[in-house]
Length: 213
Image (cartoon, rainbow, N blue to C red):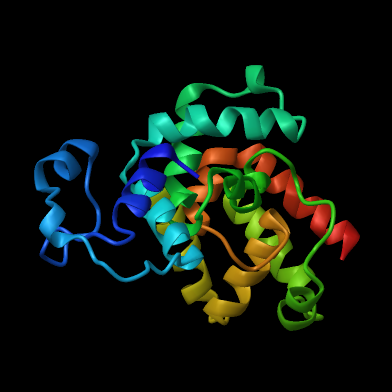
């Protein structure tokens, strides 16, 4: 738990500022505190509310601050921090921080940026990997190889245009693409993901998925 989240949470056990405001800095708590707003009855210690506070304070932190807090977690998972710039870590954090309640959970949401999938979610494979998928993914790899500007928006325009032109099912193609690169059908915007990991790594992961699945 972030210290500021714990302070804010504890301050509201048996006290309130007289309005609906819940998120308050230490300075605000000092300014607003008044004994007349303290309850004489027992306070309810709601763990779920404590988690909510932590989530909200994670969202309030800058991406740069969170990236620094994420570094020890990455080390625990064997990631060589020397291989990644601060800008890379900051960008990764910005894409996934809205999905977590604790800093340690950033790893579950962002591990695929650092480690290529070794396994693929079974339920997603059953749903999204059909007989035609290898052929379509092979075509998609050729499309990706031909993209000059591999940043998110240009890549998205090219791929979506190709899917539309071919008359393929958008959801099926994009989910199979995500499954191949991420290992499961969830995560941030797919074209943000491939911009960060780069063209070569994207295609390498697709080739591995084709040989594995």
